[in-house]
Image (tube, rainbow, N blue to C red; front, side, top):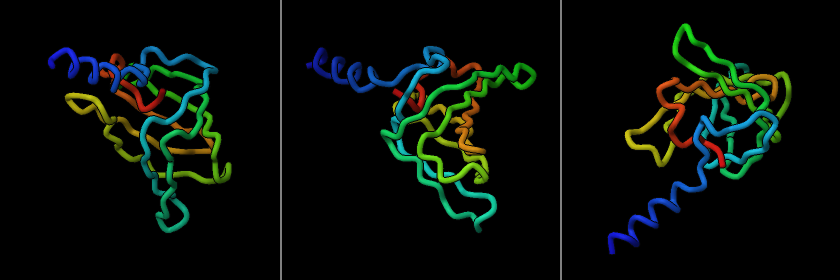
Amino acid sequence: MRLLIGLLLISFNAFAADWNDLEIDQKYSLQQSFQLPQIEKNKSLIDLMEGEAVVLKEIIGLDMINVSLFKFEYKNCPGVEMKTDMEIIPVKNTSPVVEVGAELEQCMLEIFIENKDLMTPSLFE
């Protein structure tokens, strides 16, 4: 029984790529849905849905604040002029729970993660 539970837990997390394993110019899909509030449209929400495609374009180390910025081209972008506020998103299947900052600007999904959490499962598969 313990073996079965262990295998289920491993397979449950097997599809999530760790932040450290993500590669530039690779296509990924969101592993969970979340919403971001638009800045200019009375805080209307942009829905980013599980399964939507993104392409990792850049990883920037913000060493002064011990954070890494992952910039993804968001394929279902509603328009290049659209910008959202940053939201804190808890990453599912992490224990303890890892939180990232997420915002969308000029069709780039920007994810900010603390460097100490780079070896944890990401939002992508």
